[in-house]
Amino acid sequence: MVAKKPAWAIEKERARRGDAAETVWLFGLHAVRDALANPRRDKRTLILTRNAADRLAPEIETSGLTPRIVDSRRFDAPLDPQSVHQGAALEAAPLDWGSVSELCAPREDAPLVLLLDRVTDPHNVGAVLRSAEVFGARAVIAPHRHSAPETGALAKSASGALERQPYVRVPNLANAMGALREMDYALIGLDGAAETDLEPALDGLTRQPLGLVLGAEGPGMRELTTKLCHRVARIPAHGGFGSLNVSNAAAVALYAAARGRG
Image (cartoon, rainbow, N blue to C red; front, side, top):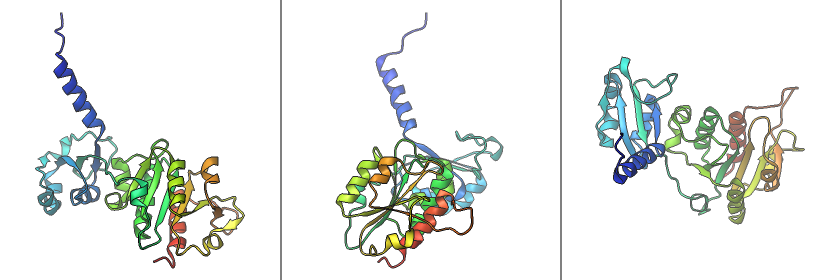
């Protein structure tokens, strides 16, 4: 007969599983270096090869973590076998950037934000975060469901931008858009079938808070998302092939919107 575990032991196991579910494993030298240097990160476990530890020595010292040094042939961090970890993995809690209303509230500027509707590929979202950082976006906003979660693959694709560029996943994208509208944001949706080009759609908006809304490749924005946009515009294209990857479209749109903004 197997002895029944006491209630306290069961609760302890549940808590441990809950803590594990609330963390993410970041990997790769760039992603781990930037996470170690980020004071906003709640950092838990650091696993490194000796070579990676030597390369990350300044960041390790600043972080206060004591790494576990492992042999490169027995790198036992719980990563996908295909992950290019470069001998570095960090377990950390996801970043908490606060609410849309707090983060995106206009102050003495006209903020620029990006909203992603059902963009699930972590490589695309990572590239979007890089562009958002380059062009000074206040935040990248996406729904909890049907969007890329914060993972090691996303962090590696973002090349450090995940640590600096707010990526806010919200329970309901329509509610987030409503909150932005209440803060006087102009919302422009990107749709290849729109009749208006992006540049004229941006006319007169350089001093107004602005949100650019992009949908997933293929289905695009959902119907309600489109209805909540003030304007819908397209990125003009030459030739018969007029479709951009969503991360490329985001970079073009951000560049166009960022020109002339303070």
